[in-house]
Length: 265
Image 1 (tube, rainbow, N blue to C red):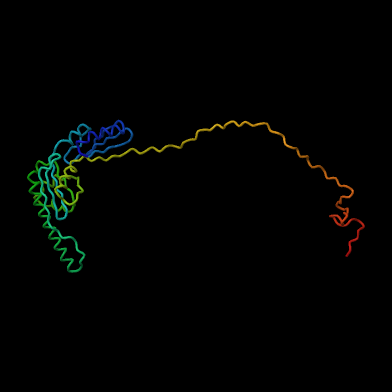
Image 2 (cartoon, one colour):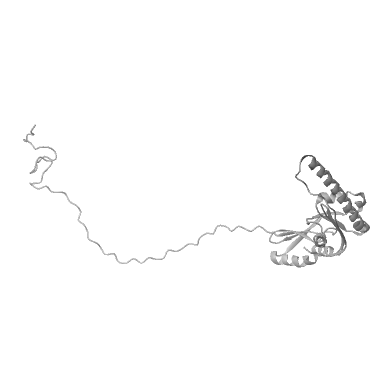
């Protein structure tokens, strides 16, 4: 975030999360809100962290001189910035052959050629950095690099750039192929205040107990009595009703033939 916009952002942070407490920790400033939200403010390179919000805002908005070194394979962009303005710059490129899929002797030959081209490009980039950065090294609050780390390290390994390397910041910019437009954007990225925002964890709602429901009264009407069925009584046997040992009109009873009745073979 641009330093000039930080004060307004902090006002919005307080509106969203409530009262705050400030805890200065090297090299950041922690702003903790009442609801558990935390904003971790990282000052730009060359700026002190400050012990409260007022001193932090005052420090990050002071115009400082920054050195910029952006490098990738075969390309370099070097600049000087005063506050948000790029006051001096130099962009250079040098051809470096890409990798080849050829094998055997041809692959080794191309690898040696590529290595020589990369070494020459690094030397040209170091010359550019010496011309732009070394004369202003004593006035630089910090040097911010970006691009490809191996290429940057190879450039700063030049002994002539020792005064520049001692001011190198930990902030490393992720930028595309170095161009003048990329260098201008890198000034904004280099002097920005980085904010790490930790939002409060949402509270999980507890189980919702259902409200008791009172049953509605049910009005019962008069009950009309139905027909009453008589209870079954004992079964009376008549004189002609077959009994257990009395033959019926069509044969013996269920218990066999009656007395005096012969069963035919």
